[in-house]
Length: 132
Image (cartoon, rainbow, N blue to C red; front, side, top):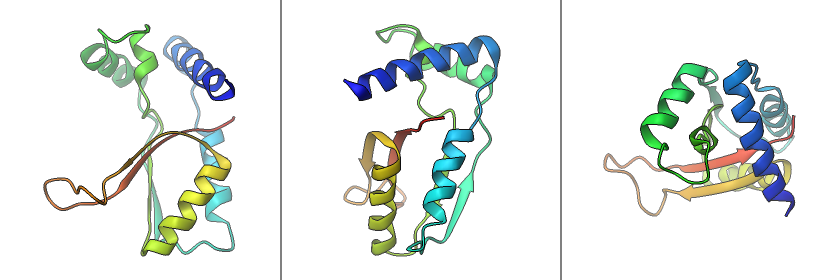
């Protein structure tokens, strides 16, 4: 139930974002900064992308999610704030995942180590939800 409430809050906030354009990455930044400042940190580096624009969120929701239920289509957008953390070895991946599960709500995890994409690239994709 608590994670469902968090997801409903995400839908409400994202819908509000479309109306007000005031989404920030403050909660995400705090979470990632806290994780990367961990004394056990052995990650290579962090790559952040700009917050997805209001226009792109609307366009993507209409192009890809317009038929999805429940509505609104914008509630299906999960990558408004995007980032990558490059890990140099398996131990750092394990530590990072432990910390992400500790500090964030992991909504979805896709492990592409067992089944690499066509060019051989391997990664783990996480959809996370953080408190503000």
